Length: 224
Length: 224
Image (cartoon, rainbow over all chains, first blue to last red; front, side, top):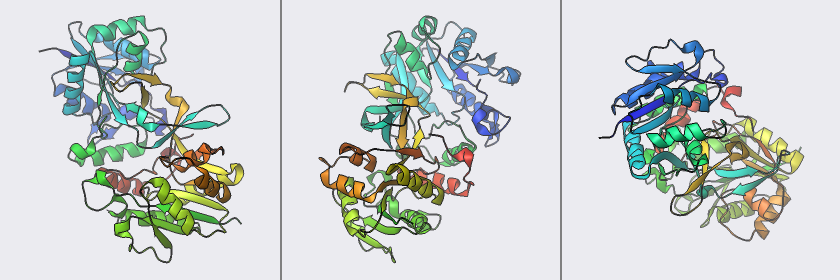
């Protein structure tokens, strides 16, 4: 069986939450948000590294490892990769603010990565989409059926992810699929789960509680 | 003061909900979903036409008017426009499955339309975005900061909306901004509200209930 490692990125400072506590450390159904992700990856036996902000560097993730993040998401993931054992065959990178990641999603994304070297969960876009075409507010309609929003965990063959983080030419990427694509590797998308939301605002904590009570089933997913 | 009319599009058959009841007629906090939109537009004194599916054509919208929808969204809006009084200065088109539309959003969108002839509420995209580049699954990263997802109500100067619906060359549009843009009119975007969600799956009803209890405030909105 191949060995899976995961870098859980929880280094953000969460300025959007109107609170001194970064969102990944706020409480959701009795646990810090990031703890839910840790437990999801425990359930699949992954080796876990949690990337923490400097001011939370003592947050207890035992028996797992933690490291401190950098100035950008790219720098934080890079620190996480350095802290992860070198014998992982596949590495997942997961946003610590997506507490509803399911065991099922981790396994289906891993399966995609085993088959195609990368696995990136994605969702169809259900709202009409426009592209800004100038700084004065002009825009044009885009065909939403051609777009996917992507989630995490994104899972990659370990050598590809590590090489990409060494070779990438800039550090402004918003996800890891973009990092590997920027150096020429293939991004394979797989079906995400709509319930796998990102906690970005206070109300998302309440929404996450509702979603936790819903049985995950076909109706809570969207086909790619 | 200018007169506002609204076409509330509630003609969909809601196949995605695993239910015989279309989502706009499901109950949310004690009322059919579409009723919430009707009351929001009542609160700003709009003239209201509700577009219904054939099998729900007797749904009671009194004291307002209703008409029956067509085979496409475009055809349904067109029927709604025909049923609306000809003396409206501005016309809003609103999805009947967005029950959380606020009086504030209607008024700010109307203000945009009064100033720029159209008002289209939009949100920034918070997930990474990819564009499919082939039917075999290839994709490329897109700069999410250049994109907006658009909501309803979309509000237009009445003559522009009516003319656009007469001149449009096809009927596959997913929103009204695309209709007016297709015949050369300007689309002006304004700030949407994140809580103004579309009910597309059963869990959205539960999420809507949570959002209804939240005080709408700056933190529940996203800047354009």
